[in-house]
Length: 403
Ligand SMILES: [Zn+2]
Image (cartoon, rainbow, N blue to C red):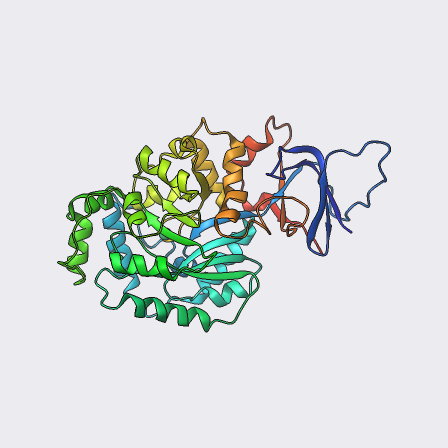
């Protein structure tokens, strides 16, 4: 029965334990505790290299990415505004017939090397399904629908469900159907997706990402309207609701504790309060927001509002790597008043809970899967939690072998 000991153990569900240990059996956590006193039975030490200068923590959760876009890495330059970035992305996507799978496999390996154990993966093509099934990652797979001018919403959702039903089952993957964003999905399709979501199904939506989205919902005009018209999918039947992004999705049945509201850069305090009241989760992706021109997310306001906060990298089309520790480092910069402990909880427990894996992952606690990482610590750090949100790199991370 392996026992891993380290200078620090971060269970997340309780404060960091100095000179802690984690006992593991059959791939599951059996016990976690602090230093043993003289009366304790001596524990069998793991044969691992000395871990004196390490911190053990649960594998991280990347609650928002698009693995199928991994081939776009470095090919879309940072944009001054989000519609400009989207135009660049669409032009690039039109140059290929399908999403190449080798960059997806590389991205999964990269995510693993950076300590990630669970992803919320947005997909239009399901191209990442098989690579994910063959990898060590767990995933909430979000089969995303777009369609501003859809004639038969029920048929579109039924077709997506049939695609999901045809996938080979995998114990670590769960799939659900989700809408892209308020400006790209018709009201009828939003309602149909909400209606079709069964029991425990998680729904993710890009929400309050750009100022142009807020403008669009208020006035029905602006650059999203121009883009939809240019694509030939504008609908004259659409009437601007004059509501905020959160009010809008609430009107269409999407606001509940199973919602992941991704980005939320442009949300006012009232909208954040509403998400908090519903038990929904905000997924912060600040590096992507900077890249796409969406703006600077109000990270401190997220935490002040009491809403659950998870962390996502977004796709390699708008971020330089899939290292969640890199995302945490920017969150720390943007929100110096938020405790490092809260940021770490966002990148583990909050993400696992939001994605529906909270019973298995996200904390170091008896009964959970022993998907644990050890982060090498430099000499003489004063605050282990602060260190862990300062931008840990993959060469300082390794996975603990729980078998
Ligand atoms: Zn996204």
